[in-house]
Length: 454
Image 1 (cartoon, rainbow, N blue to C red):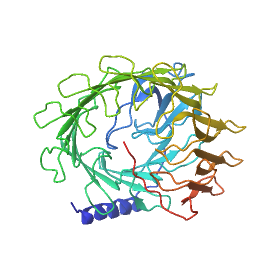
Image 2: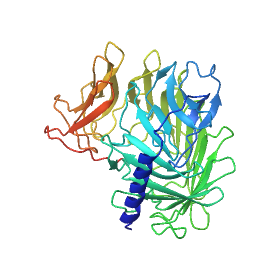
Image 3: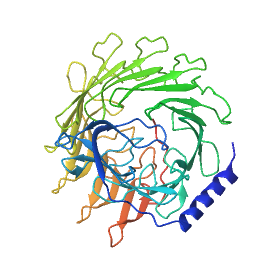
Image 4: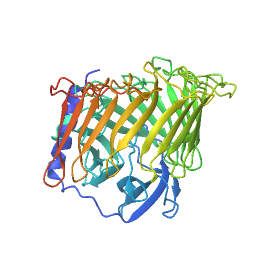
């Protein structure tokens, strides 16, 4: 479906308004909240909200989010922290461990920072997100911008979002690529124009696929028309339930009808179970009915185990029954992840039999190389990524200046999805990110192919 004129016109108006209004400001925080997790978000229209709020005292010594608000109650900064230090956190809905939000009379501008404290790209090559606000301060339209200020698509192939309130607590969302084509919500899902229904508590309760026309409820490729979202009393995500046109459970494109979560005391779940359309236990495509997690005192994942539909220990993907992780003493970084079968015997998984993924650190404690090894401790390529080593380089100001992928012979290797082998980051005299150069294994300058698998 083409809508080039609409998207370009809205974009021009958005930029024009930005030139005429007041300079963006990030107001001083007047209120701070702390939380162990965040409320589920399926659209950037939704507020970034804390789930399982805790006190400042309770936040000490555990992974947590810090949210700062201005005197109008608007979020101006989000950080993921452990003992006052930024910690790596990247998922589909919180795209960086540090996000700053500034406001003008009619816009909201989000910028992103990595765990090393420097401005960074997220969601592919997104440097800045600009959201147009209506006269009441409600979000109307979003566009992504690259390092040079140019409109771009994010890693979902989306260049812009447009929102319309159609009824109380109901928002209609259109997503477009740079050519004005309607886009699905994210890879692996079939929602096109989407209706988001919110409860009186402001939490998303249901989303409905309205197809490319946006006129009526429309089944996706698997027959799913809507999805119900559930929460616990703290606002933590507990349920994803696919429904057909008659509001009956149905398996989605991932061949799962329902996922039920038991939240942990930290940012992830401690238990996830998969249910079929009849309400009975089912296995995923990769074999598990249930996934169980254990955590350390900081909230870092220590173990991941799998169960079948009879709740018995299970090897998935061949011989993986248990994944163990160890962390640095301060809890900041994962040192190793090792794989075992249900008998706790060392296991090599995948085509190249990876048993261990190990991270090495420099004198300052920065992670400078993450490598994969087999049962004989030989360096091996991870087939899912296309390389054996992921190498980071920092300058004397502790800024990330390079990321490179290598094979087992220490030759540059292209990332399987991104089709690049190296990133080079440069900064200006103020320490601001100035440029990112990407090359393939042949040394040719190239553009990353952002096409995530979810």
